[in-house]
Every structure is written in structure tokens, then in C-alpha cells.
Image (cartoon, rainbow, N blue to C red; front, side, top):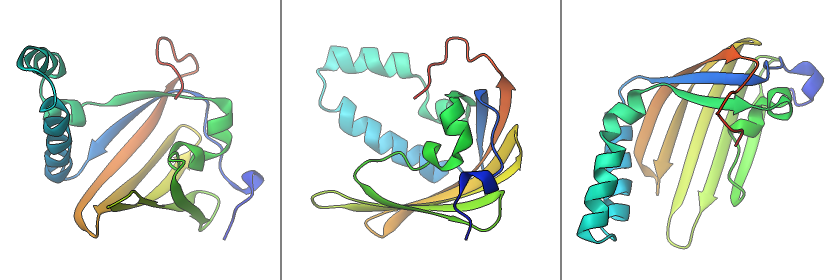
Length: 159
């Protein structure tokens, strides 16, 4: 197991673009359920306004996303994936370019487990896959590819 930063391949800081892949049906359905729960609490006028602004959830999930990776995040690739404070997290390196990240999160009446495998191809590209289960079922599984776009993040703010 590798854990020190000098053994890991570092990513290039700046603007990155990520594209999800695979069968995204379960991911779309999960997002729709979450959105329906939130929208269901709004009055009808506000709900309709939000629905028209949001557009198709499926289109949003399938569209590439952009993220600004800071020099600190680039030096520790796990920081961008293990971001939930109330979770037990681990990162197991199986070489300088491959890491398996596991997060176990528990709330009052539910639990969620996420396992993400990341393969760093070079300082400007990485790929991987992620699986998440909620209360031991409802498994979501998808792949992703991320590529560096530019040094300057422009209007995209770091998380």
C-alpha cells in the first residue's frame, strides 16, 4: 500500500472536464427521486419555475462537468473524492497511479457506501469507476474520464 504524496502521480492544477459513462439509468432515476423529494416541498409556482430552470436531469447527468482543481487538490488526488466530513474514509494505493477509495456514511436511519477506483493515466488525465449503495441496495455504478483543459479555471470556482 502506498500512501505518501511523493509516490503518487500528481495531477496538473487548473480546469478539468469530467464525462460520466456506462449505463446511467440508475443514476438518473436516483437523481429524479431526490429532485422530486425536494420539489415536492415547494409551492406549485416555485416548483414549476425550478423544473423549467433545471431542464432534463438526464441531460445534466450526461453532460460533461467542469471543475477547478487547486494545487493542493492536485497534489493529493484523494481529496477530491473523499469529501464528506461525517464519513469513515480510506484510500488504498496499489501503485503510484491507482487508488481505491472507500467511504461509509451513516445518518440516523440510513447508511451509504461508495467505492471509487481511480487510475491516473498521466498528469492531465485520469479515469475510474464508482459504485454506491444505499442501505445495502440501490447500487449505482458508473465510469468517468477526466481530462485537464487549461491552467486558468476562468469562471469555475474551486470547491
